[in-house]
Length: 298
Image 1 (cartoon, rainbow, N blue to C red):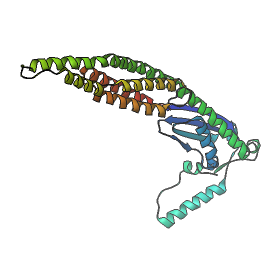
Image 2 (cartoon, rainbow, N blue to C red):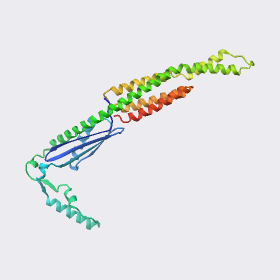
Image 3 (cartoon, rainbow, N blue to C red):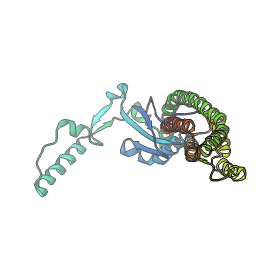
Image 4 (tube, one colour):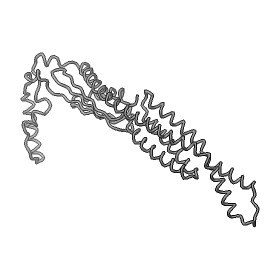
């Protein structure tokens, strides 16, 4: 199955008197980059959460945002920590006097500071859980949001794969046209060269069939594109196998597109035929569109 690198997922659950929300967003990236934003006191779980993401995502930048707020049923059990408020205010005054700073702490500033509001001793506080239980909860909530993200990435990936498959069909049509036209290049060159020599021959020099044949043989060898056409067809087949496979295909597709571009450029430099040149230009344009689409795949 093909996956896009862009997607979004979210989930939420309640634990220990809190409502915890998980938001996961992913965009294109060459590697798997995980950026975590969560309450500072949960940084101890960062490695575990990062590994959870990497177990689900192979490629892309993944932003994980975890928010925590007091659940409705626990709000009534909140208690003001007056000692913490007093400590914050005294520290603020000390900073102002020592460094000459200006400004005042607002009520919102104070209430948002760690430790100002605490759960009273009671059922909600007792259900806060052990560090292991918190770790399990965070992993479970993150996994749920990642599954939602993967569903979106899979849907978009299927559209990308379908579009790439259609474009591969077009490339195969161009390839077939090149293969049909290639034998005519030598015969047309032979006829044109013979006609030109006939027009130039005023009887003062003999026409040597042997040398003429050697010239045609050298030209035929120089403009032969059979190897390039064979390799192109092989690359098409490999692209189809990657799109139908279960492994991430983005990097391999990028490599194959580079190889197809190289073979197309070689054909363009070898061929001495207007129609073949036009076909190579059309193939290069289509390969560029494929490259842009493949850049969005995991």
